[in-house]
Image (cartoon, rainbow, N blue to C red; front, side, top):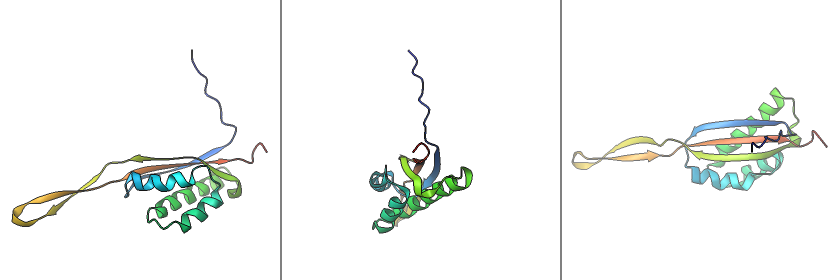
Length: 124
């Protein structure tokens, strides 16, 4: 039996941030707080949160709203974050030199963040 995919009634716009220099665990802590909220409420929450990881996510949500406004002509007041996900990226590896000719590896984690915005006022 083949399931047909339901077509979404609401127009969607997304923004994708790749290779952001933070661990996926720290980004998920913030993304879980804003998933399902409106655009204006999300910006207010991100400005008041004390974590440094909020800034790249703030920029990504702002970019997704700009995409919605410019490409589809949607109003920013009606946008809702329908989907937000964080995936692990590759780790940037550096060498730290130590005493007696030794070295150790420093792994700096990266993540990929996807933000999807929906306009909920289309069918209302």
